[in-house]
Length: 251
Image 1 (cartoon, rainbow, N blue to C red):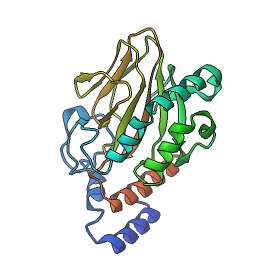
Image 2: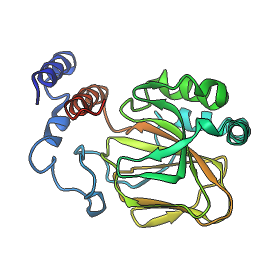
Image 3: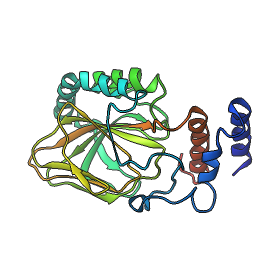
Image 4: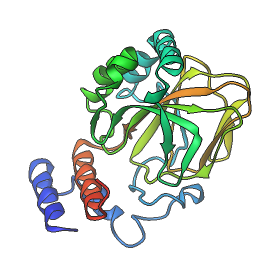
Protein backbone atom coordinates (compact mmCIF):
# COMPACT_ATOMS: atom_id res chain seq x y z
CA UNK A 1 0.00 0.00 0.00
CA UNK A 2 1.06 3.59 -0.57
CA UNK A 3 1.84 5.91 2.38
CA UNK A 4 -1.48 7.64 1.74
CA UNK A 5 -3.35 4.35 2.07
CA UNK A 6 -1.41 3.36 5.18
CA UNK A 7 -2.18 6.70 6.81
CA UNK A 8 -5.89 6.45 5.98
CA UNK A 9 -6.12 2.87 7.23
CA UNK A 10 -4.34 3.83 10.47
CA UNK A 11 -6.83 6.64 11.04
CA UNK A 12 -9.76 4.24 10.50
CA UNK A 13 -8.24 1.72 12.92
CA UNK A 14 -7.77 4.49 15.47
CA UNK A 15 -11.45 5.41 15.22
CA UNK A 16 -13.05 1.97 14.91
CA UNK A 17 -10.53 -0.51 16.39
CA UNK A 18 -7.54 -2.53 15.27
CA UNK A 19 -9.57 -5.23 13.52
CA UNK A 20 -12.01 -2.89 11.76
CA UNK A 21 -10.34 -3.17 8.33
CA UNK A 22 -8.85 -6.64 8.71
CA UNK A 23 -11.01 -8.12 5.94
CA UNK A 24 -9.88 -5.40 3.55
CA UNK A 25 -6.25 -6.14 4.41
CA UNK A 26 -6.84 -9.86 3.87
CA UNK A 27 -8.32 -9.09 0.46
CA UNK A 28 -5.00 -7.53 -0.53
CA UNK A 29 -2.91 -10.50 0.57
CA UNK A 30 -1.63 -13.08 -1.95
CA UNK A 31 -4.55 -15.35 -2.75
CA UNK A 32 -7.09 -12.56 -2.48
CA UNK A 33 -8.32 -13.37 1.01
CA UNK A 34 -9.14 -17.02 0.48
CA UNK A 35 -11.02 -19.32 -1.90
CA UNK A 36 -13.79 -17.98 -4.08
CA UNK A 37 -16.75 -19.42 -5.92
CA UNK A 38 -15.81 -20.74 -9.39
CA UNK A 39 -18.21 -18.27 -11.02
CA UNK A 40 -16.42 -15.36 -9.28
CA UNK A 41 -13.06 -16.22 -10.83
CA UNK A 42 -13.20 -13.24 -13.17
CA UNK A 43 -13.61 -10.68 -10.38
CA UNK A 44 -10.49 -8.76 -9.40
CA UNK A 45 -11.19 -8.35 -5.69
CA UNK A 46 -13.21 -10.55 -3.34
CA UNK A 47 -13.70 -9.22 0.17
CA UNK A 48 -13.61 -12.32 2.40
CA UNK A 49 -16.49 -13.11 4.69
CA UNK A 50 -19.33 -11.87 2.50
CA UNK A 51 -22.05 -14.42 1.76
CA UNK A 52 -21.35 -16.03 -1.63
CA UNK A 53 -24.94 -15.49 -2.76
CA UNK A 54 -25.58 -14.55 -6.43
CA UNK A 55 -29.25 -13.53 -6.15
CA UNK A 56 -30.52 -11.53 -3.17
CA UNK A 57 -34.06 -10.89 -1.97
CA UNK A 58 -34.58 -7.16 -2.72
CA UNK A 59 -36.36 -6.83 0.63
CA UNK A 60 -34.03 -9.20 2.46
CA UNK A 61 -31.69 -6.52 3.83
CA UNK A 62 -33.16 -3.90 6.20
CA UNK A 63 -30.53 -1.36 5.13
CA UNK A 64 -31.56 -1.59 1.47
CA UNK A 65 -35.32 -2.11 1.76
CA UNK A 66 -36.10 1.65 1.89
CA UNK A 67 -34.19 2.15 -1.37
CA UNK A 68 -36.12 -0.66 -3.06
CA UNK A 69 -39.47 0.62 -1.80
CA UNK A 70 -38.75 4.20 -2.83
CA UNK A 71 -37.86 3.29 -6.40
CA UNK A 72 -40.73 0.86 -6.83
CA UNK A 73 -43.22 3.42 -5.49
CA UNK A 74 -42.01 5.96 -8.05
CA UNK A 75 -41.89 3.57 -11.01
CA UNK A 76 -44.78 4.97 -13.05
CA UNK A 77 -43.43 8.53 -12.97
CA UNK A 78 -39.87 7.33 -13.62
CA UNK A 79 -41.06 5.39 -16.69
CA UNK A 80 -42.99 8.39 -18.01
CA UNK A 81 -40.03 10.75 -17.62
CA UNK A 82 -37.66 8.22 -19.18
CA UNK A 83 -39.92 7.89 -22.25
CA UNK A 84 -39.97 11.66 -22.65
CA UNK A 85 -36.18 11.82 -22.39
CA UNK A 86 -35.71 8.95 -24.87
CA UNK A 87 -37.94 10.63 -27.43
CA UNK A 88 -36.91 14.24 -26.97
CA UNK A 89 -33.46 14.33 -25.35
CA UNK A 90 -31.63 11.42 -26.92
CA UNK A 91 -28.37 13.39 -26.73
CA UNK A 92 -28.43 12.80 -22.97
CA UNK A 93 -27.84 9.08 -23.63
CA UNK A 94 -24.46 7.65 -24.59
CA UNK A 95 -22.90 4.33 -25.56
CA UNK A 96 -22.31 2.46 -22.33
CA UNK A 97 -18.62 2.17 -21.56
CA UNK A 98 -18.22 -0.98 -19.52
CA UNK A 99 -14.75 -1.55 -18.16
CA UNK A 100 -14.52 -4.50 -20.54
CA UNK A 101 -15.85 -2.88 -23.70
CA UNK A 102 -18.04 -0.22 -25.28
CA UNK A 103 -21.38 -1.11 -26.86
CA UNK A 104 -23.39 1.05 -29.23
CA UNK A 105 -26.50 -1.10 -28.68
CA UNK A 106 -26.30 -0.52 -24.91
CA UNK A 107 -27.26 3.05 -24.05
CA UNK A 108 -26.83 4.81 -20.70
CA UNK A 109 -28.20 7.92 -19.03
CA UNK A 110 -26.21 8.69 -15.88
CA UNK A 111 -27.62 10.01 -12.62
CA UNK A 112 -24.55 9.39 -10.44
CA UNK A 113 -20.97 9.08 -11.64
CA UNK A 114 -17.44 9.91 -10.53
CA UNK A 115 -18.40 10.10 -6.88
CA UNK A 116 -21.29 12.53 -7.24
CA UNK A 117 -24.71 13.21 -8.67
CA UNK A 118 -24.90 14.20 -12.35
CA UNK A 119 -26.78 17.46 -11.93
CA UNK A 120 -27.87 17.65 -15.57
CA UNK A 121 -30.04 14.58 -15.05
CA UNK A 122 -32.14 16.43 -12.45
CA UNK A 123 -33.89 18.20 -15.34
CA UNK A 124 -34.03 15.18 -17.64
CA UNK A 125 -35.35 12.55 -15.19
CA UNK A 126 -36.30 14.51 -12.05
CA UNK A 127 -38.18 11.78 -10.20
CA UNK A 128 -35.43 9.18 -10.48
CA UNK A 129 -32.86 11.83 -9.55
CA UNK A 130 -34.83 12.84 -6.45
CA UNK A 131 -35.41 9.26 -5.29
CA UNK A 132 -31.75 8.38 -5.82
CA UNK A 133 -30.56 11.48 -3.98
CA UNK A 134 -32.83 11.03 -1.00
CA UNK A 135 -32.84 7.24 -0.61
CA UNK A 136 -29.31 6.25 -1.62
CA UNK A 137 -26.94 9.22 -1.84
CA UNK A 138 -27.88 11.20 1.26
CA UNK A 139 -28.09 7.96 3.26
CA UNK A 140 -24.66 6.86 1.93
CA UNK A 141 -26.03 3.54 0.70
CA UNK A 142 -24.74 4.14 -2.82
CA UNK A 143 -21.19 2.96 -3.47
CA UNK A 144 -19.36 6.18 -4.44
CA UNK A 145 -16.81 4.18 -6.41
CA UNK A 146 -19.42 3.26 -8.99
CA UNK A 147 -22.58 4.75 -10.46
CA UNK A 148 -26.29 4.88 -11.13
CA UNK A 149 -27.67 4.99 -14.66
CA UNK A 150 -30.56 4.07 -16.86
CA UNK A 151 -29.41 1.05 -18.86
CA UNK A 152 -31.15 0.63 -22.21
CA UNK A 153 -30.54 -2.50 -24.28
CA UNK A 154 -31.65 -2.05 -27.85
CA UNK A 155 -33.50 -4.87 -29.67
CA UNK A 156 -31.16 -7.75 -30.42
CA UNK A 157 -28.49 -6.55 -27.99
CA UNK A 158 -26.67 -8.95 -25.70
CA UNK A 159 -24.24 -8.38 -22.85
CA UNK A 160 -21.68 -11.17 -22.89
CA UNK A 161 -21.08 -13.23 -19.73
CA UNK A 162 -18.63 -11.47 -17.43
CA UNK A 163 -17.77 -10.79 -13.80
CA UNK A 164 -17.55 -7.26 -12.50
CA UNK A 165 -14.58 -6.06 -10.48
CA UNK A 166 -15.53 -6.91 -6.89
CA UNK A 167 -18.12 -8.28 -4.45
CA UNK A 168 -18.29 -5.47 -1.89
CA UNK A 169 -20.99 -3.60 -3.79
CA UNK A 170 -24.26 -5.04 -5.02
CA UNK A 171 -26.36 -4.18 -8.07
CA UNK A 172 -29.99 -3.04 -7.83
CA UNK A 173 -32.13 -3.10 -10.98
CA UNK A 174 -35.44 -1.26 -11.12
CA UNK A 175 -37.31 -2.72 -14.09
CA UNK A 176 -38.48 0.47 -15.82
CA UNK A 177 -39.60 -0.62 -19.31
CA UNK A 178 -39.50 -4.33 -20.03
CA UNK A 179 -40.76 -5.74 -23.36
CA UNK A 180 -41.14 -9.44 -24.07
CA UNK A 181 -37.99 -11.40 -24.84
CA UNK A 182 -35.65 -9.98 -22.20
CA UNK A 183 -33.73 -11.90 -19.57
CA UNK A 184 -30.74 -11.81 -17.24
CA UNK A 185 -28.57 -14.71 -16.10
CA UNK A 186 -26.53 -14.62 -12.88
CA UNK A 187 -24.37 -17.59 -11.84
CA UNK A 188 -26.19 -19.81 -14.33
CA UNK A 189 -29.73 -18.90 -13.19
CA UNK A 190 -31.86 -17.02 -15.70
CA UNK A 191 -34.65 -14.68 -14.62
CA UNK A 192 -36.82 -12.03 -16.21
CA UNK A 193 -37.51 -8.55 -14.92
CA UNK A 194 -41.00 -7.70 -13.66
CA UNK A 195 -41.81 -4.14 -14.65
CA UNK A 196 -42.00 -1.85 -11.64
CA UNK A 197 -40.10 -4.28 -9.41
CA UNK A 198 -36.46 -4.55 -8.36
CA UNK A 199 -33.88 -7.28 -8.74
CA UNK A 200 -30.80 -7.41 -6.53
CA UNK A 201 -27.71 -9.46 -7.28
CA UNK A 202 -23.99 -9.80 -6.63
CA UNK A 203 -22.31 -8.95 -9.91
CA UNK A 204 -18.95 -10.39 -8.95
CA UNK A 205 -20.63 -13.62 -10.12
CA UNK A 206 -20.66 -14.23 -13.86
CA UNK A 207 -23.71 -12.62 -15.40
CA UNK A 208 -25.15 -11.76 -18.80
CA UNK A 209 -28.24 -10.08 -20.25
CA UNK A 210 -30.06 -10.04 -23.55
CA UNK A 211 -32.90 -8.33 -25.36
CA UNK A 212 -34.37 -10.73 -27.90
CA UNK A 213 -37.46 -8.56 -28.33
CA UNK A 214 -38.36 -5.80 -30.75
CA UNK A 215 -38.42 -2.83 -28.34
CA UNK A 216 -35.71 -1.29 -26.10
CA UNK A 217 -35.39 -2.67 -22.58
CA UNK A 218 -34.55 -0.21 -19.80
CA UNK A 219 -33.63 -0.76 -16.17
CA UNK A 220 -32.37 1.76 -13.65
CA UNK A 221 -29.14 0.37 -12.21
CA UNK A 222 -27.87 1.46 -8.79
CA UNK A 223 -24.55 0.32 -7.31
CA UNK A 224 -25.06 -0.01 -3.55
CA UNK A 225 -22.71 -1.07 -0.80
CA UNK A 226 -23.03 -4.75 -0.03
CA UNK A 227 -25.10 -4.82 3.16
CA UNK A 228 -22.61 -7.15 4.88
CA UNK A 229 -19.81 -4.57 4.68
CA UNK A 230 -19.20 -2.31 7.66
CA UNK A 231 -18.80 1.46 7.77
CA UNK A 232 -15.02 1.33 8.43
CA UNK A 233 -14.61 -1.18 5.60
CA UNK A 234 -16.52 1.12 3.25
CA UNK A 235 -14.26 4.00 4.16
CA UNK A 236 -11.15 1.89 3.68
CA UNK A 237 -12.35 0.47 0.36
CA UNK A 238 -13.14 3.95 -0.93
CA UNK A 239 -9.63 5.13 -0.05
CA UNK A 240 -8.06 1.99 -1.53
CA UNK A 241 -9.84 1.96 -4.89
CA UNK A 242 -9.61 5.75 -5.32
CA UNK A 243 -5.85 5.63 -4.77
CA UNK A 244 -5.41 2.65 -7.11
CA UNK A 245 -7.34 4.49 -9.82
CA UNK A 246 -5.23 7.59 -9.27
CA UNK A 247 -2.02 5.62 -9.62
CA UNK A 248 -3.35 4.02 -12.80
CA UNK A 249 -4.27 7.43 -14.21
CA UNK A 250 -7.98 6.61 -14.19
CA UNK A 251 -9.49 9.57 -12.41
